[in-house]
Picture (spheres, rainbow, N blue to C red):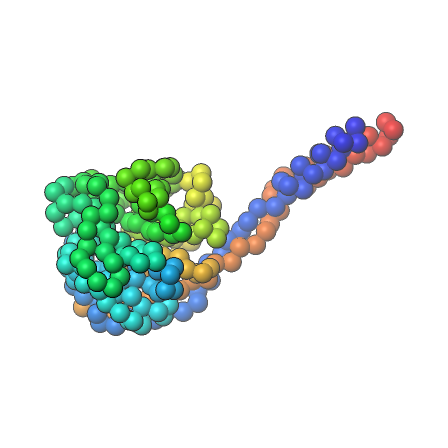
Length: 283
């Protein structure tokens, strides 16, 4: 019986804490005119993070260039892709990856190219009309949504997960608890989370559980989600607000997580202590 009482108390302690998340505005940076090029053509511009170099990656439609910047948005390098309908960008140690729908159903949706030299080549065999969708690469894994099937990303809800070694093998699909589409995604392995930007002109940033897809938090920041990008790096979120011609900005938000008691924790603790007291009386 003492074992039963201890088990009750241990179960209680394991269920007494949850995590509350806040986003704290850190800074906003005006971006170089090269990151305000024209041409959005119904899809967001792309923002990614290169874990190997610690740089942000910007991809704009109609430009055919991946710009690498520091974490304030200052351009460090540029790499031509030769593609004109790029929608998302990512990287691993040696390659850039980008999604594109230049040829619609006649062209591949995800391409890769060496960071230093050479032309892009198909990375995944997937093709779809109006392809080009949010992607992210973290720790040797490719994360991408389902194909949109149209110019709008308002119906996107899934994260498909595959190894970079076998991109055409989908190892797992996570369906996110949202009806607002996905303007961009940011994978946060530090918190086992997917951060997503609504596909809306006044968008919230939402945090989802990377395992279950459940929404854990929402932040109504009124951000652009139609012509914008979102990425995660070292405990911070970066939002790219693209403005054609001039005036694009990069905003940075710090992530803070604190443990809070679950609503029922007091009742559970009382129940556990009650069991312990009953055992003492019986003994």
